[in-house]
Length: 477
Image (cartoon, rainbow, N blue to C red; front, side, top):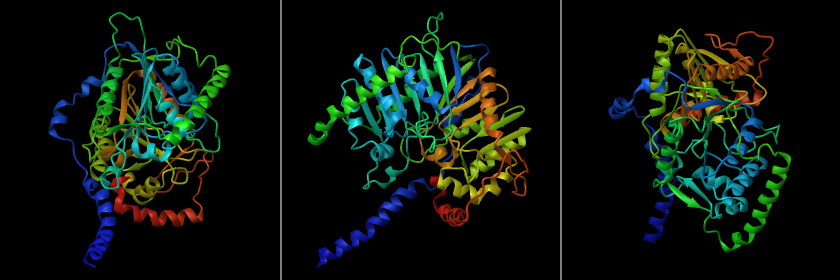
């Protein structure tokens, strides 16, 4: 009888343990420590003349998929693919069939995926076992959630980049599936953005690109950490029976892909003509551990924005700010003549929690003094970028929210280069043309060329509830 009583107590305590264990470690946002502040050197983001790297913006969804496939076929020694989320589909099979082909010709392939997304969308799929059990391919998950350690459900890996040898780096906000890549599903497609860095071979004393070297070191630090575990190498007997068929599917898929796209599946591409010269490219990132983080990325981005001479343009899918971030935005708006923030209107956004928080705190963002614009396009925009004056362009995985600031791993490339700055500005201008300015009283400017997409009655009721409810856990947004 006593044992039954204790068992019932345990059952009652277990939900509380899981909920509190997932929430309490992240409630209090941290600040950047003195050690990091001493290491921070803002002058290192600038160069005095063109370096050995070149760059271009990858804006279009089909271009984003084609660029990835083409990059994989340039590989001779090694490929690194890191992403928050991979899901099976046409674009995924384009990429994975190309990775298997690269591994077949001796290229070392390493794939790193966030553990929460990996378990949800890759586990049990024979296609990923076929790739992961290939002798030339290794797949790892970062921070697989453990219900007995509920704090592991937060602290996700949000990075998205592809590295080829010592010559190519693609980094941005796109996950690896049809919602972000290609045009296989026009009904469900998001706008997004990457930047391609090309390290031209044959230049005197060029060595390895600085930003490629930085990104490799960052990747190795995560890859070899205690948080990453190899998956798909030891399939069950049942799965082993499915792997040959899945491998045949990938091989058949590749044959069709190569026949339709010979330009994409050929080696020896010269990226010089499609890229522009830059002075410097630098990687910035958050700490890699799974716990509440010092906001390394936000600290650096805020500093660079606050010290702009004339203008700052922020493009983010959504904004959910902490008290420190509100103060940072106020300082930026006070010091810089023009500060604009462009994000999805609630009716266009695809993140319920972020849109709920924005519904509640829209006025607080306006009160910081920034010029706020809401995007009313035909699709949600997932791009994350910052333009600072006419030189600096920042592109990466970092959203202007508390999750990206204090919880997740994040990466941004800071690029000094006027041509690329203009290129990025033109891309943001296209989105801005379908946006409306939010007036100080919260109303939208009148513009016949940009029709407002209203919330339905059901959506208004929903967000009226969730905008209040999610305030309890807004530090996770």
